[in-house]
Length: 144
Image (cartoon, rainbow, N blue to C red; front, side, top):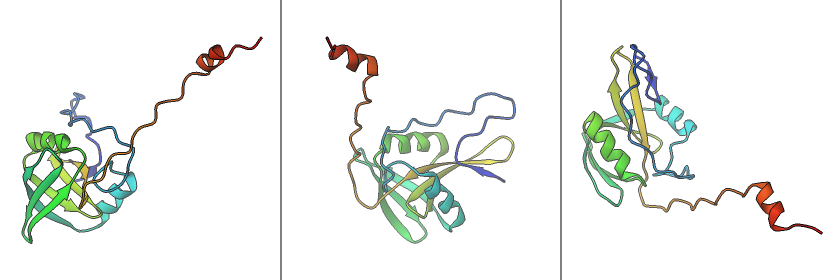
């Protein structure tokens, strides 16, 4: 079985089921956006099987494993709830700081959606507004 960080198209060419949308955040800190290097490292390291026992509105996720209950935080509890609705409570606790939600595709391949988790809440950085168009700036400061 091959694994993919994204949902591959189905063999029939139909679009795969939509994964829940992500919160727009520019932080790659624990509990925020998954970085591709973080994802790659998690695929090389051992994982622990678990089940999500609960997700609170403020981002706390309780996961039961054979080693006991573990608690994580994410900035995007809505995405976790959506993945639970689509894929069930089974998850993989992965290092460094990820929960993986697997789904076996029709062709036998496995798609894993990753959620970044941390041990404590941290705020998402504020997004700076995009710079205005050059023409708008030029028209505000006419010379002559």
